[in-house]
Length: 110
Image 1: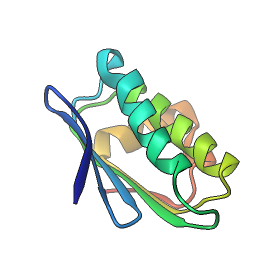
Image 2: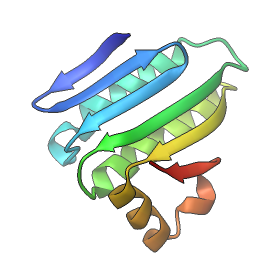
Image 3: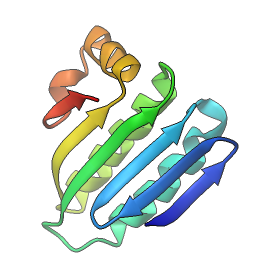
């Protein structure tokens, strides 16, 4: 496992082709978190199969959803395949309420 980003209690780890986020993602850390994940995604070979795991995001956060949507755009632009997205229960509820669940490939709640 490699840590790509850490600020306060927010962290971004990569293991294989799995990006995992944990902590209370807010707008103060969202830009740095998004940039770190996007940079890693840009380095992956086309057709890499990814897992985006946000099951460790502790509270409801539109900032976390913004980061996730940015990563899905980056992955698509780089020709990567997102096999699954795992959301924490609060994040899954927010995603459904916002109508964004249909934009995420195979999104499930942890």
